[in-house]
Amino acid sequence: MPQQKTRNPLGWGYLEDALGDEERRAIAGVLGKVFRLDDEHFRPCPPVGGVPLRRARVEPPREMAGLVSGDHADRVLHCIGRSFRDLASLRSGQELAAPDVVATPGNAEELARVLEWANRDGLGVIPFGGGSSVVGGVTPDPAMDRCNGCVSLDLQGLSRVLEISERDRVAHVEAGILGPALDAALRPRGLTMRYYPQSYFHSSVGGWIATRGAGHYSTLHAKIEDQVEALGVLLPDGRRLHTRALPASSVGPDPNRLWCGSEGALGVITDARLRVQARPQHKATRGVVFPGFESALEAGREIVQAGLWPAQLRILDPDEHRMSNALSGQAVSGALMILGFESSAFRVDEPLRLGLDLCRAHGGQPREPRGDSGKGEGVDNWRRTFFRQPYVRDFLLDYAVIADTFETAVPWSRLPDFYRQVREITRAAVNRVCGAGTVTCRTTHAYPDGVCLYFSFNGQGRHGALADQWWEIKTAASDAVMAGGGTISHHHAMGRDHKRWARQELPPAFRGAIRAAKRELDPGAIMNPGLWFEG
Image 1 (spheres, rainbow, N blue to C red):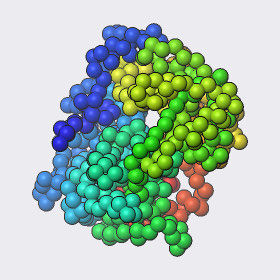
Image 2 (tube, helix red, strand yellow):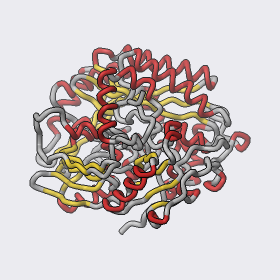
Image 3 (spheres, helix red, strand yellow):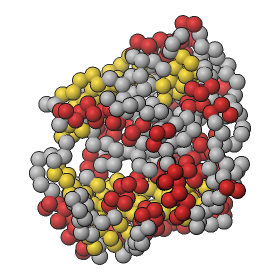
Image 4 (cartoon, rainbow, N blue to C red):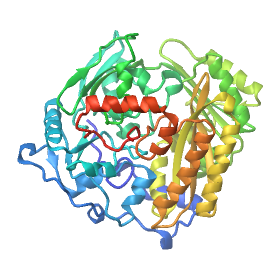
């Protein structure tokens, strides 16, 4: 059994996976030409004991002994998600709002005990899976002040695999299980989730569902809400409910969809029946270089509208392509498409050939496979950086570099004007706030009617002002997205960061319906107060 890793209370992921000295030197050697990565500008995050927290209002009661902790280190770990603003707040020196206690139930019965206590005493409850939220989804909100205290409900103890049906291709699992543990249980059966968000190694099934996430292969396998067959939910007043395990139904609105995207505000997702996949036996991935982003987008549109259904269709604009290769020292130009097909039953050479023909028709030049990987040039460089990017962001934050992302989805008909407008408005904001910087973009998921655009921005900030500087850029970018007709979030959820724009996107009558549902499901209004549909 692999050794359990240690969650980093002050940054992304696990302590054991943080950048090593060699990686830091390599990054400094390349990005030090752009940012001030020197001793004068180095200000590391204080140690856990040096992070000031608001004084706890709740003492763990005797009846919760062994289930609830008021330890400072536990409170620090659970007081933030892992957004740029979250991590900048740790460096601010200001007293942070934090859960008063952290509960760690190990089974459904213990979970029920914690919720009964919180409901009885009027304590706000924030469900906490892997803690990788980048939109303020697990951060205590000022709305918590109307409660008598705040409990962070860490659900990683609920991590059992309850049943795997090979015939139905459905896995019934508890909500706290992490991606690697789920796939390890499926592997001996020849099955897999085939769901790889950037937070895969330390995010939970419950978190995926509660945020309506999307994984690495979602162009083929769809977002997580389409992989949910049934859910189990525990309400704060002790009521339990399970939706029926059915392939489909037309009996009213789908109850599963009420909790998909609910972000812990409508009860605690305890378990889920997930549609899983046969492990692919045939794979083919190639990189294709295009003269520009627009021609690559057109090729991508034709590929998905032709019904070829690639497992991967990611397109990096020229700036993103250069950035992803910066540490390798390889000079590249043009936009890069990563086009991949896979199947458990048939060879995928023919759909790949057809996809590459469509690329060539738009000026794309496929890169020949290298070595034994069978992947085109450029794919491996991108893949290596994908899971390391958040760790690089944490390293740069020590030098006051603002580095963050935002994502949206928009119909094909609004491209490429939408891309140009959002990029230019965001770039102007970065230049205004930081003096200079870069804005890059890639597509991550494609549909017959549109595509998800995933923007990255960075610039040199100032220690002591990072959160405010970030918010000015974030606001300009979000306003541009909404003005252009995009969604404020494609797969990162709403959280607290997006409340202003969510109210524009969701019809007022629908927001009222959700508030009515919350009154029914959470009469005491203790579940994750302050989220997007309130007010």
